[in-house]
Image (cartoon, rainbow, N blue to C red; front, side):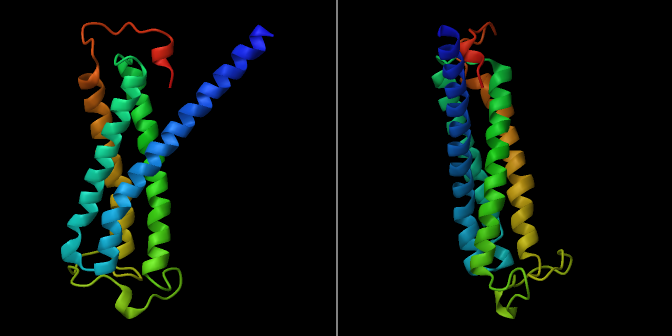
Length: 180
């Protein structure tokens, strides 16, 4: 009886971790997609800085995740555990941001999968941009959603575990603090 109760408790803990990753990943994806929506409404290459502003918002959400993750572990989570957890949250956020961007492209670029309307493509783009049905609009969005967000998430995940730890002198932690 005690063994099954312990097993059920571990399964619940793992499920709550998955929910935390999904929650912060979704929040990071939504934060990234807010400037993407404005960029899609304007469809002007000179506003492409908004895509990188979305990556910065993604970064800030991951900072909040790492601070929350460390706080749940008495502000002394293991560095390796925080590195892995940060990359899991980053990957979750990237997958969700790509899905949300695909949905946004379907909404704001009529005929995105077929033949888009001539007025619904990127304007004032340079001559050397990747040419596709949307004149590089979809390429720019998906590249910043993957490469830009991965860079931002990995940067935060590598830097912050070393800065948010309360006790910087040792790495010895309890079993509970090492849980993902």
